[in-house]
Every structure is written in structure tokens, then in C-alpha cells.
Length: 362
Image (cartoon, rainbow, N blue to C red; front, side, top):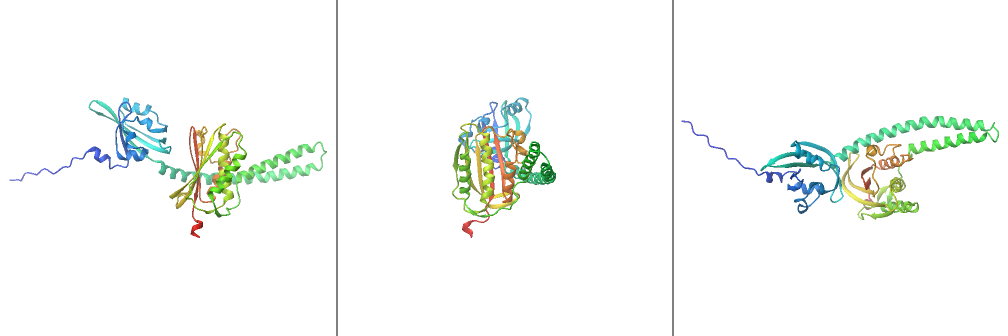
């Protein structure tokens, strides 16, 4: 007689208990898009407390969100699941971040709800974008250098021919050769600016905050719109080796751009922070100094954000588009990088400068 098979023990897992183990934020929204369930990871991903999450409408969790209510309501109405990638948001604490959202409607007790998974992709995307931009920057710089040399050669011949011709002309006719020489000189200066700084950094031990203060003083001397300047410095940044002249030039280019984007009564915040174990240009650094230039202007147009550091790309009418390119080159000579986040009412440039050799370590 065959023995009866004993039933195996089964463990009943509670959905709420499992959701607490996830690193992904999981929320449930009702038909008014109010939060009626969330797991612990939601507080970390969205940088907000449990008290403020409970019963709060999801769109009101952010200072700014590109998503809007329409896709969420459409998912509920059409009862279809879909994903939304690269949603630019400003969290409640003012921190910008990119989110991936996965929306899944479900029915419970004859009511429809929206299950939402939220993944923060900011850091991974930043590293990927930085690598792509680094290759693009090198390619653009090489193209500009080749074009610049091709332009400078005929310019020199054109200027020399105008000087020779000038010696055989009357005083009245010399006006035209002088115009040719002046325009050739103007084009040569433009080409030199396209080529950017040619000398390597002269690194020395310097105080980063003294450099920022000099930039602030220079900007305030030429400040017709009466832009207000604020400082927020991190005193823990040590004295370390860099070229203060080149970093001053890079920072001044960015501050000038911010001034030109602002109207009367605008505001610029100069902020410094120290970062630990930060990756730049594919290399991990123990210490990195971050200098932020934050303004409350109209923001950078979306159509030029990805090419902002390319030569001849400018958001200003009549702008040469060289200031940011030169600034990026100067930071890259130090092993650093410049990044930008912008939305209406807020533009934030961050200059990352590796700290490899401090005065205390010598």
C-alpha cells in the first residue's frame, strides 16, 4: 500500500513585508492620485518623510516634475500598464534627479488603483552622460583645432598682401587696406579664442575660496543689472594643488554667463562642497571639490542643453558660444569636469576639481 504523500509546508508571504525589502520605491495611488501605500524605499528615493507621504497627492511631492498628472490619470482610465523613462524632477529638498516610472493599474474591492515603481537613475545616467560628453568634447576640440589652423594660414597671407599693397596706394585708398588688415586681425583673435588656452596648468598650492572671492569681486565690478551675489562655502575644503589663474578664468566665464542671463534683481549663489569617493572621467577620486554657480534666471533652452559645451553654441543672441567651451577645457586640463542642470527659474553649473595633493599631506 502506497503511503499517502504528506503536504509540504508552505509559507505565506505578506506583500507589505516583501515590499519593505526592495530598494525600488513602490507606491499605490488612488483615483485622485493620493498615496495610500508606500514602502520604506520610497522615503529614501524621494527624500521625504513618511509623515509627509501618507495621503499626499503624488504630483505635490516635487518642486518640479516634467511628468504632470495626465499620464497617471490616463493609465487609470485606460487600465493599461506602461513605463516612462528619464523624468526630470526636483525633489522636495531642492535636489534634481532623474526617475524611471513603471505604472500598473489594478482593481481592488471594485476600485481601481495605480501601482507605481520608481527608480532613481540620476547617478548612473550622470556617469554615462559624462563619458559620452567627454568623447564628444574631444572630437569637437580636434575638429575646431583643425579648422582653426586651416583658417589662420590664408589669413596670414591675406594680411601680408594687404600690407604690401598699402605701400603703393594713396592715402585715400589706404583706408580699404587698413579695413582688410583690421578684419584679418579680428578673425585671427577669434580663431585664437577657438583654440583656447595653450599653456599647461601651472599647479601650486592655493586656496579655492580665495579664487571664488576674486571672481565674485570681478563680477560685481561690472554688474549693471545689480545682480545679488550670495556665498555658501564648505570650510572643510583643504588647500590643494591647482592652477588658480586657469580655474579663475573658467569660473568667471560661467559667472558672466549667469549675469547675462539674469534680469534686474536676479541672484547668483556661489557654493562649494567637498565630495568623497567621486568618479570623474572614469576615474575614482578620494576627494573632489565641487563649485556650484546657481542662478534664478529663465533656464537654458532644452534644445541646446546636450550641446551646451560645444564651440559656437550659445543661448544668448549674438553670443560667441566660446566661454563654456574654454571653461570645460580648463577643468579637463585639471582632470575635472563641468556639469549643468537647468529648469525654468533655476540653472546650476557644477565645476568638479579633483583634490589629489593637499598642503597637509606634504
